[in-house]
Image 1 (cartoon, helix red, strand yellow):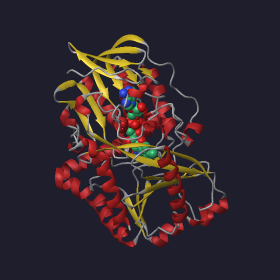
Image 2 (cartoon, rainbow, N blue to C red):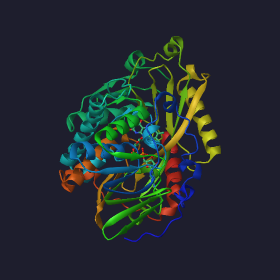
Image 3 (spheres, helix red, strand yellow):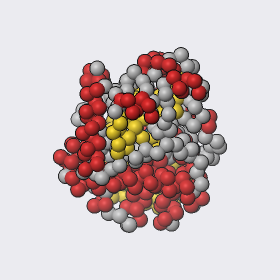
Image 4 (cartoon, helix red, strand yellow):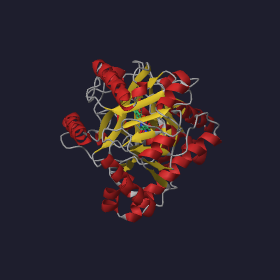
Length: 459
Ligand SMILES: Cc1cc2nc3c(=O)[nH]c(=O)nc-3n(C[C@H](O)[C@H](O)[C@H](O)COP(=O)(O)OP(=O)(O)OC[C@H]3O[C@@H](n4cnc5c(N)ncnc54)[C@H](O)[C@@H]3O)c2cc1C
């Protein structure tokens, strides 16, 4: 492989990025509630000088950190991770903390139609393993991830969608043996919460809420304890391969490795490696958090659940009451990533929160932040090794559901590298290759079209 020489400044890391440059700049404050409550940063000093290792990892989110942890701990492999910002700076440190299944935009029916019922069941089984893995990692490595709730709720935002939830519950029960429960509007109003956009719901046992940045930092600590070398603030600005050895260039150093894992998900730079160019579609997700709600305010919407909730809109809202009583409300939107877009999305989410939960309309919003989730052309994750260079591994494209799937993927990548798993062990639903988008420069326009379509179908 020959990759053109790149300038070494981190400003040039994303030379042809899809969104405004501030979205990719670790110097721009994220502003998340998680940063204020996560405890000590684990980043340490940047990578310097010339070093060699067996496996290099690009990207210090759940995928990369879990791969580093499992490579070092389970397989005793010499591993070094490079992250552009502080460790956990990407989506892993700023998500909604829903540790839940289904990293794909394909429906259950579409998945069964394309891959058959057995493969679909295999995929759902990975999701059970993934949620369990997060619990296990937190417990066995003493991470204080503030687990919350048992399962999560899908809430119908209109009557039509409740019928859809009924069908979904039936499929999840009969085909996938999942523990789900339907609750009509009155039951949700009495036992979960009530709102202007609540027409019944479905509870799915598979999942819980957590503190995402504490989980990322906990993984980083555990990976270091296991012997992995982790470097934050060390963007890979150039990637070459000579005589079977990968050479990763950072602003202050050069890392040589026999194998590389690309774990950059929605923050994947264009033109770092030709096989990944045009293969991902980063989609912006935005979150607001209010000040702690009083007992009276919670009672005004009859809020009674610890479980995370998602509604059934195509342009969905996801929300939970955090352990300290703050309300977290998230949603997709904005296709530019400019600072003006941030102000607009904050106002939009604040307004919509007040429409869905009128009693909380005037409650001050204390935090707003955003980041990228990652979609792929075939609407499902891509995990594997490049067919043209089996020394390059990748795991990405969790479609906004990576809290459980990304650490699971990291562990699978470690097993693939250690020779304890083979390509056939990757369920077809998650197996690469990563397909390039047709006319990749038009990706944001595809997204705009999809957002308009979803907006119309949600009406
Ligand atoms: C606002 C928001 C809310 C979300 N809510 C949920 C949720 O509630 N539940 C859920 O399951 N999922 C959620 N997600 C998605 C979830 O966070 C991701 O799927 C998951 O964190 C992906 O982990 P990752 O390690 O693959 O990628 P990331 O955590 O994004 O890490 C990729 C890293 O690669 C780094 N990188 C990129 N290029 C380079 C380079 N050249 N050199 C070095 N490093 C580089 C980036 O800096 C970044 O830190 C949400 C995402 C967002 C943005």
